[in-house]
Length: 355
Length: 92
Image (cartoon, rainbow over all chains, first blue to last red):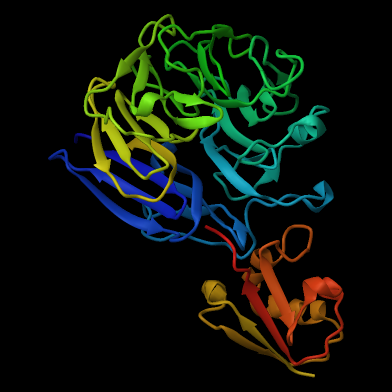
């Protein structure tokens, strides 16, 4: 049976679930967790289990990790929250920024603020703080950005469960080759223009990293000013900005065909799409050149912001959402775009799946 | 003395719909009342307090008309038979 596409769209006011029917039309249900901000969501399809995870955050009552085993019809809210900072950390959970599958079939990872990684190795039944990262000597020198001190990106490897890469704002890229026991900083070549030393060992405000689908050592990185590529497993980085109107932005995805997509914003102090035009930029040559994609996107008076987890792909279908609540889709690797929702709340994350 | 706890409607998902909970017992400080409340409705604890056992930043607890955050927090001596747990007027 032909698969359809399911989108999990987390917004500042709840989670929306969209499905693309066989006729190409989209249907939507939600908001789930109405009024609560959902910065992360995930559909675990490993072993055919179809378990949804989402992390609603209440301004008043804090953030939690919730599970649905009926594709979003109902969600649990455990009496004791799954993700909690241990008492000896002397801190409290601020938000959950990322929910990701581990490299094996039962592990899950959660990235949180304040710069914490949680892990589960039993399909989310039990969770613990990753102590290797928490005890990292750099941790006390990481500083919060505008969104808090967030561990917002986790990249795992189905071919090597011990390989985990993360990104922290601000801290930068760290990675473990031993399943999270120890962590190495790998920011070489990435700029931190806001620091006295523009190329420090750590302290970069990396906004997103993503791996090429078939070349395991090839990574792309969207920085707080700077777009980069790594050919050595996210260890060292080189600038790839040829053809871009700006090197500032947040979201990044790589499609099945290996095309990478970003949405540049004017600059740090002017966080909206360049020149009032909503343009996605695509590279098909691993970052040597970037081309603007405009077909179906507004090219006049379009002052949009696309957040770090609001660009996603499944296959060669690309999706992104804006802070103004517009959700766009391309079903042809970015060649043309269509707005599928126009008045959602501020979109915090978009996750795409074949179901 | 017995105490009645009045809860924000936002919390009734964790109390089977109740927004008023009557607690019998001898309570000295506000924290004693809350300990009894958690026993009756365990899910409230993680929502009202953070992991350090502190009242969340945007939650207010009143004993009578006094915000306990302006007194001694959970250690505030109980001088009223009514406790209110509200979400603060904040957000966007």
